[in-house]
Length: 396
Image (tube, rainbow, N blue to C red; front, side):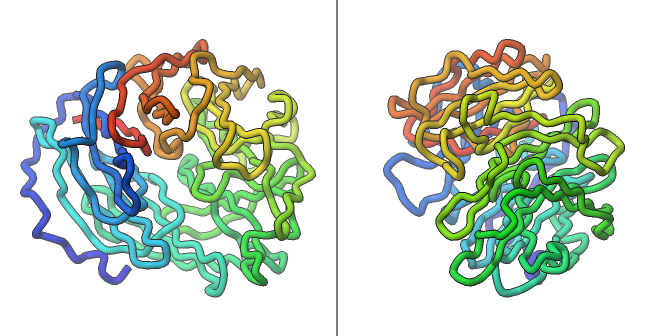
């Protein structure tokens, strides 16, 4: 990240600081229909519970094709995934009048993990082969500058002849929990493994990023999914992690354990052996693909009827993590092609009763309202001319 302090002043607007008034603005990212290799447009709305918005003639166009998003400390961060080439981090802010403006740009490594930790962004570049070190970068969220860098030997971390490939990272108290897959990283089977029935979470101190321990279990497979956050921290501080049970060896899925949810209780760094939520059994044979924590121990699950799937017959369910109840959601279109990214969701309504998610369907794309208590979906804003990729909320 040697170029991280280089500002692109040509595209930077002078920003006038102001005292936030607690107003809400939603940022919807959408890929224009019928385009390839084009990055999402950034659209803004005060309310997404109804009406419509279009990519035609609206929003900010971005460079690159694949981008990922986080909001933190009053900033909206757009990170370019360069597919082996350098990436970048572009920072946007809302003016006092509610206009989204770019305030900073710097070139960065292409990373596979991005998380909010304290007042920083934690980015991880995780090689799938070759280099044995993952690079951790601490980015000051307020100044969009690198605060520190750390190398972690992922072959030594795996300690089984394979390599640890982090799926995501989550702040838990004053530590960082980073689940990982064990992968071969070689032999024409980079993401294959000889260890399909184990779970691992690496625990790091912060900000020093020293490895403190690895939490292990063998009741299910690895936690999370490539570029998908496997962990959720409840209001009580307990940590729940899902496993897709989709480990492979060659072309075969080899996990013998079920897709399930496990728990680490607040203040501990061990899996709670008294807790095991067998979601595959409760769902009648489905595997979790990704998750979105809602509130009050409720989690939305994106599920498929076969392991490792990211498209096909997508079904959505709401579970209560404590009571282990499972309910298919009500009000969802019969066919859902894709959803907005669940890893960055922060769209909970002010009263804590409603969350929002983008659903892309054959008949159109809508932002749906989720009644958390009942698990009922109702359509909100329609997004015309674009596939919804993310929804985030900013307060200004």
